Image (cartoon, rainbow, N blue to C red; front, side, top):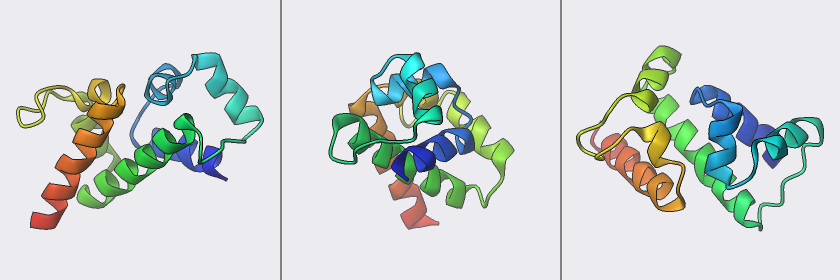
Amino acid sequence: MLAKAVLKASRQLGLGQAELAAVLGVHRTAVSRLKQNPALDPQSEQGELALLLIRLAREVFALAGGDQAWVRHFMRSPNKVTGGIPVRQIETARGLMGLLQFVDAIRGKV
């Protein structure tokens, strides 16, 4: 269930297989295996990162009003406030959590 959700979240954010692998801290072939055998333990490090990515996808999707083009633009464009390009920032747990906090803060003001 978690594996399917994180794969869907990565598609919503416009992430490729290698980018999802970087977020989860696994080799990209592990993402291929995840597609074929959707098992991911939510208690594992990868599972916890997957839960954060799913939350980010939901928050950004809601912020964008469901506009996929806007979501992809947001994820791939330099952001002065976060100091980087979100798709690159989420490759580390710290960056993923920071971006999630940023999006949470924006949504609180909307």
